Length: 140
Image (cartoon, rainbow, N blue to C red; front, side, top):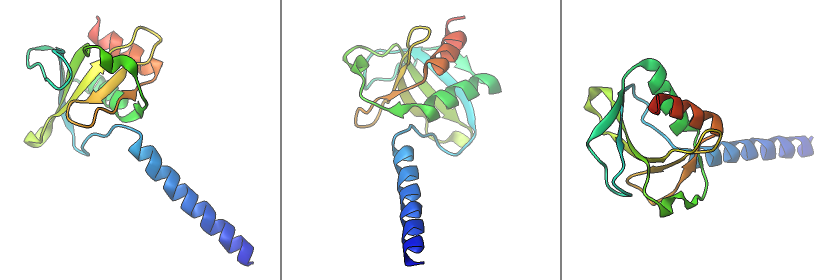
């Protein structure tokens, strides 16, 4: 009986630790409604270009960007040696602060790289499927 309790305790702790690690390895957004996604050509890492070239406020486009951001997994990328392709500004309702993210848009069938503008330089990779969805939106 003690062995059973010990195994259940170990399984529970493993589950909790595993969940915490996965949250630390993905990008996050505020738990608030996104009003708009603005995109501009990037001027470089650490700088946010305010000259918007795309503005998405329809539900479907916002969902694509939210999915890209929330499912991107922290991984080392050599993309940061080049200038990002785009700067992405996630605008929330209620005047909450904007999330500023750099985007290196991958080619069709490749992964894309995301990085918070303000942060420690960690990079996050999307799936190739998400890259294809982003490319559909931005390269129409």
